[in-house]
Length: 581
Picture 1 (tube, helix red, strand yellow):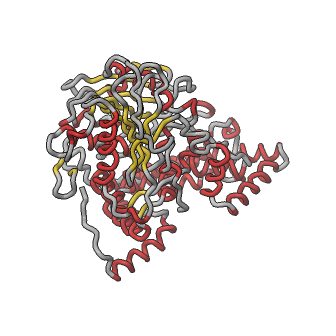
Picture 2: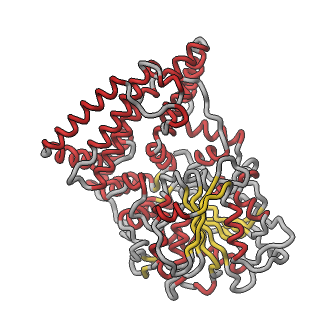
Picture 3: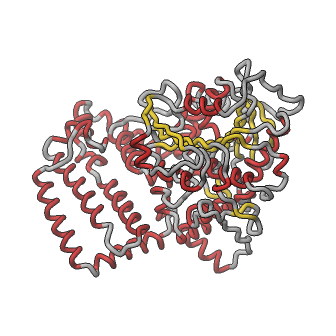
């Protein structure tokens, strides 16, 4: 893990940082050196490969002929691209435009991967080509989109008039301000979302620990600690009452604790990964131990990076002598990881923008502010999904005049947080660049600390991956099977990184596959696992509850909260902290 001590910035370093920070808006916060190296790698390999040039020229000629013939993929519901599913795209000349666009995608996919290129540069070149083609797609422009043309013709330009008003509104009101106003009006924290009753029972400089009020006459004695990602606020797991995972758990007889991370500011720029580990899971387990009978084991669940941090904590607790004062902490009964990676060797598209150059670039940008803004992180995720989150949305808002209806999940997504500069650099360097946790080289306690190994895990593990997760691809999540021999129950749920987790019972079109590998069981590759695991309709939440209950003791009366233990009602203070990015 990176533990470079901070040093005084020299005048030349300040000059470089100022220049790079000024250029950042022009590159979307991406390192221009990293992008240039990928382009140069592609251009040089293409330039010295006349045979490959001839192949690509022949392919271009063939695709051009196919385009003029209007050859294309199936239309309607069979089309895997929602931008072109409308029947109007099958009419001339729009079918030719669609065919030309798709054939251009096919050509660039073939052209971007040349023998001799590094895998990272090939994938980055392919991705950037897709981004530019996404801008130029005929679905984004008024004269080349038959659906938009027909809609405006039938309504005498009404959609364009509403779209122009939407554009003026966006121009005059910053998106963050509009999102904040929508949250205040419809999804206010503590009033509309994050309303499950509870009490704050511990507070330090980084987290509040919330204990939710039991809702049943009898509860399982083993409490459940939830560690959400520090990138966003915790209440994605306690959204509206109908889709709150917390509310579901307490209704099933679980005593639930939740970490609520404080939104850091510039004064927190030197917080480290070890600080997040100590102030987060470790101090929470210590607080829970004080509120329950001695040595009561805890079910621990982590979501996204919160799950990665919890896996580090569990590995550290599994080996004696690593965690100071470990005897004061409640022991773990089980470990649950939701969309959480422990092996970052194949982190998906997010990994395309994490290399030495990009990490150094981000380190310079965050040194000036002391943190990475939530707006910058949100922009990165939008860039990864620009087709759906940027272009399709803008087409509907500006050309069709349709504003996207706000939801609790969208309101949460816009309620961004900061990441302290040093911690952000450490987690990118140690996890993404060096894959230290999977390699058994991640050190707890700084440079002089001890390395932890996931091979030390012995408690039963429940894992969830989602089919359309671009942040934590499910095959990457599945890699924990390689890293430890504990019993692992793996669930593959339909949906994406967020919607696949917020998948309450009764949610339409939800399904999941589930299978258990016994402790020390044989390896099954993910493709074989997916073929063999039975598919079930509905939410995976009941399956998890049954698994927790099977690893819990017989229910008994809920434990009373000791006098003076409450520091205030949920949702607490930290979740309400906002800053203008």
